[in-house]
Amino acid sequence: MKLWGGRFEKQTAKEVDDFHSSIHFDYRLYKQDILGSIAHAKMLGKQGIISLEESQKLVSGLEKILKDIENGQVKFSISNEDIHMNIENLLIQEIGEVGKKLHTGRSRNDQVALDVRMYTKDMINQIIGLLVNLEKALVKIAQEHTLTIMPGYTHLQKAQPITLAHHLMAYFEMFRRDIERLLDCKKRVDSMPLGSGALASTTYALDRNWVAQELGFSSITRNSLDAVSDRDFIIEFLSCCAIIMMHLSRFCEELILWASQEFQFAEMDDGYSTGSSIMPQKKNPDVAELIRGKTGRVYGNLVTILTVMKALPLAYNKDMQEDKEALFDSIDTVIKCIDIFTHMIKTTTFNKEKMYDQASKGFTNATDAADYLVKKGLPFRSAHEVVGKLVLYCIKEGKSLLDLSLDEYKEFSSIFEEDIFDAISLETCVNQRNVPGGPSPSYMKSAIEEASKWLEEISK
Ligand code: ARG
Image (cartoon, rainbow, N blue to C red):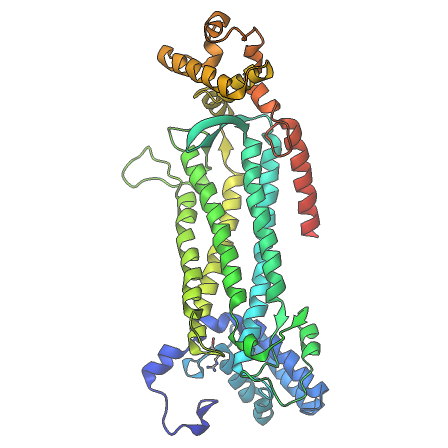
């Protein structure tokens, strides 16, 4: 008989068992479920709601089941619906009648909220750890490339020279925000819902704060109705995951471009590339493409849960069981993607010569030529026009700004002197951008130092 079978005269239809059971995916909450039950059982004993002896029996039974599961000795059953009732049933089989006391003052509604919160907290910590590894890898590569000049783009058109360090540290900032977002999200996950019961709390004198402390939560939920209806913390967390994937996807897109014959800025290691079954010459950036592609499912999972939750009346509804597959899939995907991306970027080689060569084409120093005239007294708008005409002349002549003679410059403005050549060298362009946030090697060094300190702090 089902644990809730008392008021039923017939069994659930076979296809319904299969349809509404969640054990095939929520089994992964077994540890959180058991730890939560152990804390609950201890508290029931401490409060005199059950005897200390009974409490002790529940605890050792649950510990035994945890071990059995971890040793692969447990087979969960579909007719027990979900992880919560599977474990409760196992407990009753293990220790007999007293096992039936575990669910005193508790509902699966607050139980599942607890388990998912505990699980999400663990996963947030794990994902932050992986992001920190990625950040460390980026800092290390950036350190080696503060002098590696490359073109910066807007509209995918060459814009101004920057450095590879500057470019990589831009991604560092994105992942820093991701870590901060996860830490902030964790504050709201970190609230203990047990004691909310099915919806209206409980008549037993539960010590909710004690359970919270025992399970490492920093607060308890404040409204029982909200606590069992709330999946905001999953939505927030899935939003964090979606943003992480968006960042990874942008980075992958750039690596894919950079690895192309057209760019040749970077080459992914053989271990992170694949070949073609027909074209012998091919080396494809499949790993980067797959990460970019997997971003879609992580976005999808966020939309899934937003849609499931919209218009649900308070309190618990079975619709909410649909939260888990979306949550688990995003977790698995994000963990795999960050980890493999970190290995891939660590083993990617960058072609400094190509980057420099490309930065010297496409008039990336045109702004600096205009700034040169401004510094000599010409208003910026007029300087912009002079250099615009110079660029047009160069395009017609097939030259770059650095190829022109001073005489040619003078035809466009008498202000130009011999020092124009130094003023628009790529090195000057980069070195002069020395304000906080800019690509100059000296600022980048301090930015990288600050980044390393922050990483040390966050890893403590
Ligand atoms: N398996 C359920 C879920 O994941 C657990 C809660 C069930 N509660 C209920 N009243 N049916 O949402």
